[in-house]
Amino acid sequence: MGTATKPAPKRAGKNALAQRVRDVLASLEQLSTQRDLDNLARFGITATKPIGVSMGNLQKLAQRLGLSHELAAALWATGVYEARMLTAFVEEVGRVTSAQMDRWCRDFDNWGICDTLCFKLFDRTPHAWAKVAEWSGRRAEFEKRAAFALLASLALHDKRAADARFVAGLRLVEAAATDERNFVKKGVNWALRSIGRRNRALRTPALAVARRLAESQDATARWIGKDALREFKRLW
Image (cartoon, rainbow, N blue to C red; front, side):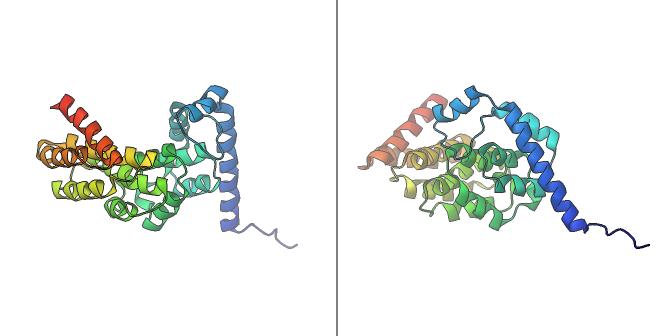
């Protein structure tokens, strides 16, 4: 008698991953509420394939799922907003590549996914600083925002970074300060404020940039500078 043909391990693995993705999407549907779906629009998040799940429930689900590079990639490929949000919590930081960051960044279509990936995942990768400089020159609104969301995240989380890196970041802030697009200018402002709050040594250069911007002839730059100055005044 012939022996039964066993499925190839690779195919079996793909089938298992596909089933796991279906299970995750089913869990997201179970967790969805109309209120959470409505909140996306209320917060200015224009996701193309939203389900409507709160951040708290996303994080609880991510804890149950654990870390998996393969699952993160498969969830991202669904295009579903909440599935992509999960990748910030289930991706294995050490397996994130520079090319992957670029691909995902090009997919950013709202501030929620942009900021969450930068604040929870990208800033912990060894590619983060290179991406700040690279993405600051991007044209697409959320790709450019990602540069400054990432810079703001590094100011909070990268405890070992030299002050010189943030001084260089301030030059990027100043260069982008006339971009009037809402999500870019708010990202630039966030980065400026975060650098100024990082430590005493960075207060002086951040304050100098804020003052120059506040006196600019450009309305967007003035808004960024004045808003940062108001925060610095409250802090110091």
